[in-house]
Amino acid sequence: MTNSAFPTTLPSPRCRPSKQKSWLNRAEKHRWSVNQLRHYMAHAPKPPEEPEPIIKYVSKRREKVERFGDSLMIHGDCREILPQLKLKCEFDIVSDPPYGQNFDYGGEYKDVGGEPYVELLRCLLPYRRALMHFPEEIHRCFVPLFGPAEEIYTVVYRSNTHRQTRQWCFWGVDVDFGRVRQPPQNFNDKRVYDLVRAYDWTDEFNVVKNVSKEKTVHPCPLPVAMMERILSFICAKTICDPFAGSGTTCLAALNKGRRFIGIEQSAKFFDTACERLERAMRAAAA
Image (cartoon, rainbow, N blue to C red; front, side):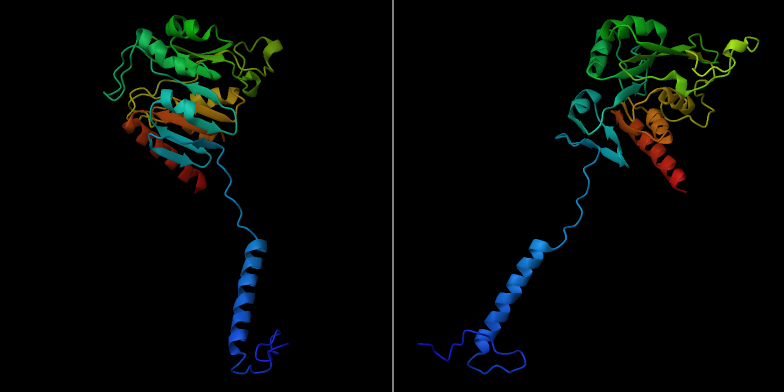
């Protein structure tokens, strides 16, 4: 038996519901609004997910990290940070490490020598690497640890210092010297006039002097042009400098359109590097 006081269907929307049916009308409207909400939640277009960064670094120590696009500057010790890097791409170490000669970096970094220096460099063993040093220290420290270099590029500074030669040594790095052309040294020899491969040495660069525009708070920064030359030889799209100093390698990588990871444990040098990179990015965007 059907109770007419409780109809099973809703009245027409054009009809004003009676008082007896008003509660059912409201309940039905409420029920349909919930269903519509569920339908919307199930079929509504989802907002695009933010892509995971190519270079990701997560640490429990909460080091200071500054992001520059897809690149990073990290304040901390490279021995602790390198194993914690999460990358979707491979990278090459490109660095001018501490000299290991008890050089004074202003009291914020102990440039240890001897066996502690070799132990400092040991953290670079798992990676492809391009490192610069004096020739004597390369044979004394680098070769026993890393083995003979596969490629060597010599830089001769035009300076009045008694040690003018530095050498870039490459281990496992994909290097193409044909990316850079240099004028021939002997113009009378027509066989090499159209040389396509760079020589294995250069004297085009000079040390950054105190009066140079590139001078920073760092006591011995490298010329940006020289780092751009080194990066021109290297095919990797991501560069890591675990001893970033004032950020010259990272700045050169930025200028060459490469991703970079800079690691520096000195707070003063880290801030200087970030300031240089920010200025370069503002200038590029202007």
